[in-house]
Image (cartoon, rainbow, N blue to C red; front, side):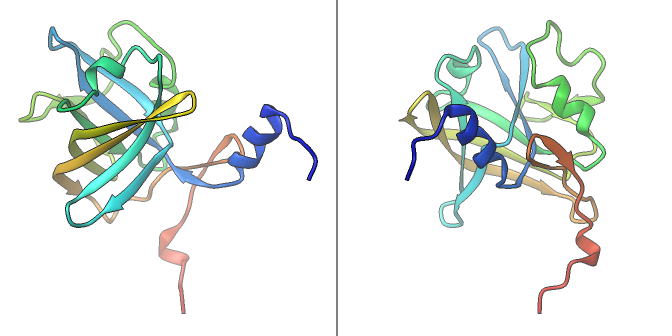
Length: 166
């Protein structure tokens, strides 16, 4: 095998289609923060665990450490603008976003496919990222909504009603 560049690796990783999530959390002054993440995956049903990755030096890292709560939003296929909005750091990120504050105190963006309220149970180093393993404490699911998919550096829709597995 020939060596590859980081750009070639990025393109190769991009061939794996993934759902798009926004994760919201609170800082120590109870200010709301959010970030777009596509590195989300299920781990276990019993106990209910998920994982996702965040750059080691992300400004959000202190607010998702062990024991901290966060809310994972699975974006709906028409919410590309939300994915792009939370992909960059902004002051007052939620000013123009349709949202509410959940009972947990976390910011909940409206009209998403699913919501997972979580608590971080472990953090593992993985290269230039941290792998956050979190226990799902609460769940809301809207199976009538279609998820937003990201592959090869672009957003794509998926009509689940037309997919039949035999």
